[in-house]
Structure formats: structure tokens, C-alpha cells
Amino acid sequence: MKLITQCMFAIGLLAVVNAAHANNAPSGKVIYQNNCARCHGADGEPVMPRAANFQKKQGLRTSDSSLMARIKKGGRICPSYNGILRDPEIVRLITHLRTL
Ligand code: HEC
Image (tube, rainbow, N blue to C red; front, top):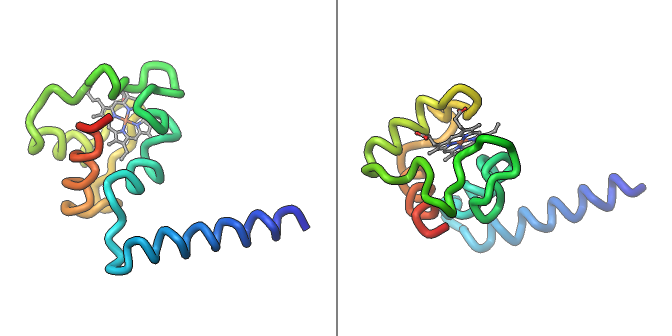
């Protein structure tokens, strides 16, 4: 029963997020929360040891294009997002990273 409640909540949440992005283009923040926050932390303060600290601008002191290449390629532990996130999504994600 608890699981069903949680599922209903998740679906409701998705509906709200979708409504906010009716054109189906999730914001950089949503992309970050969905893909990066579990290691880099919701606010850029890492929750996984050795993950880049975006509050301290770790890994961000570079151009947008090399950051995009880095996000697509991945690191040792950091996953590759090539084929997972589309270029326009990564562009919005990078804009968000620079606000953390
Ligand atoms: C499974 C955990 C994990 C996830 C998920 C993750 N990262 Fe990372 N990230 C790391 C770790 C750990 C490092 C340190 C380098 C390494 O070992 O890969 C890192 C490093 C980085 C760096 C710094 C690279 C450098 O040159 O110093 C950037 C930028 C980065 N991640 C971006 C992202 C973005 C953007 C996402 C989401 C789309 C993401 N990461 C998702 C774990 C993760």
C-alpha cells in the first residue's frame, strides 16, 4: 500500500513537472536533479566522495564546449552521458551548473 502511495506521489510530481514544461523540455535544474544530484548533491555539494564540488566550481573552470565534451565522455566514476542527454539538454544543464 505504501508503495502505491509513493507511486501515486511520483506520478503526481511528474505531472506537475511536465505541466511546467509543457513543450517537454526539462530545465537544466531538472536534468541536474535527475542525473547528477545523486553523486554531486542537489546543491552541488557532493554526496559521493571525490565527486566534483560544483559549489567550489570544481571541474567548471573551463569553456562550455569542453564541459560538454567532458559530460559526454564521462570520467573514471562519473558516467558518460553520450546518447543519454541530447546536446540542447547538456547546454541547459551547463547553464544550471554555473549557477550552483
Ligand atoms: C555515479 C556518480 C556520479 C554521477 C551520477 C555523476 N557524476 Fe560527475 N563526477 C563523479 C565523480 C566521482 C567525479 C570525479 C572524477 C571521476 O572519478 O570520474 C565526477 C566529476 C565530474 C566533473 C569534473 C570533471 C573534471 O574535469 O574535473 C564534472 C564536470 C561532472 N562530474 C559532471 C557531471 C554531470 C553534469 C553529471 C550529470 C549529468 C554527473 N557528473 C553525474 C561522479 C558522478
